[in-house]
Length: 352
Image 1 (spheres, one colour):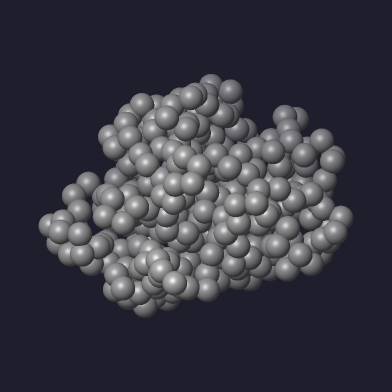
Image 2 (cartoon, rainbow, N blue to C red; image 1 turned 45 degrees about the horizontal axis):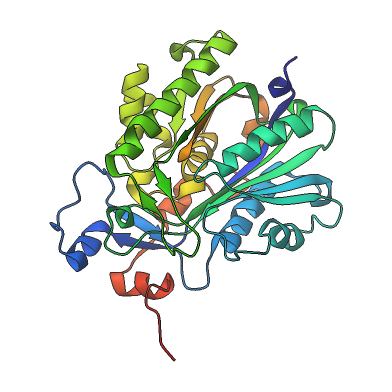
């Protein structure tokens, strides 16, 4: 057996903040046309409250994942936290969540960075660590808050949300990995230099040769290694920087949009960075049936993409209703204005 085949998803969970900021509110403030911005396919984005950050959201998502996994937290041998908006420049976020969940002290804990791919990178690391016998379970977290320069086009989609996965041995899994493939190059499409508060981006360069090139080649590599074809998958989940890119990359790969729509969350909450693809996977797992196969392909600027083949098992039926579903969070919302968003995200700096 390959290492991937020895590992599966034991539990999963997501968290989306209550508050939603309509995109036409952002457009009105900055002088853009007030109709929904063209090409984004997003109507509103999730905004964390003033007391929410990547750690608190990651903890909420992890708690939901633990409820579904139904294991002793102290059995988790590693906590890996993927984010590009951590609260502390120097101070691990993974240790805070591990302590709050009762996982410490016998565990590894590390923050990972690779733009929006850090949590996916943690999945690949987990597969190796679990398959080798180094640990039994790992907790993988993808969590980010809205990070965008006010008035920049990125502000229309950058949002707040988190997703967590507990990985472990395949015999306990609700969904098992069949294979994985990573495609990485040095492509500077998105970056944030030291001391800069917000990231910069290469406009259309972020699509091609960044997003599309890397996801397509990661998926092609996965298909070649596993011997699977696109038609073997029931669902496809890609990184969701907006509501159109996932549909466009699916079309390039010959995947009908009907297989992408069940996991497409961005039109309702915006781009939650490290949680973007994983929250789509979480939404599919909430309702998936045994035997269904999922294609998961996260992406991170800089740039790289992972592609995974995941097969749902019978054990999923006992886990789906043990925690709030993504759909529950989508329905639970309160619309706010730009003033609330500016205050909660601390866009306004007071001089004392």
